[in-house]
Image (cartoon, rainbow, N blue to C red; front, side, top):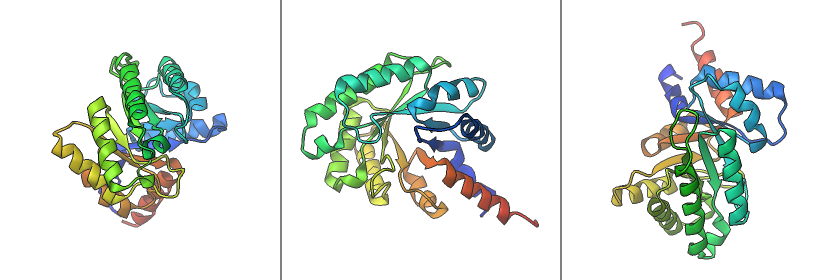
Length: 238
């Protein structure tokens, strides 16, 4: 592995979504994020308060999740979760869409969810004075290609910033053909919607295959740590 193989770190959300995490683990996690130069850290709502303070002077952004991992919370509860996270100081929000209702063709509900997220983020600023970034987790591994195309179009219409493949909590995460469909749909609509690939990304080969089509990766911190370790081991003796 060459050092250039780790360039994906600059567009990676370094992820730790366990609800119960010790202060010691969070401290080490934040230190590693800064050392690696990742784009953001993505943590559970229970960790936000600590991480906001820890990364106060850092260029690493802070992301957290809404209705994770099921997406089944009612619209009002999703709204409250978004509001709390913004008040706590997050830069980005990853909201799990109610993909079960989408599969039942309840498009009206999905449109309401997406509009809510976009509006809440558009009305708020992070500590740097920038708009809070909206990301929608669509759980593409649970959807057909046609459904992926449709939900991408819904995200485009709503003005979402990112469409995200997966929570990583279902059997199938990021798939190349689904990501390609997202990208094709975005290009066909001449949209600025971005793609975040996440869920089951474990190897450099997966990252390299997805890189031409995505703007961001969501990768678990342990996986990133292992890839960094491989890089360090591969350069020993040079």
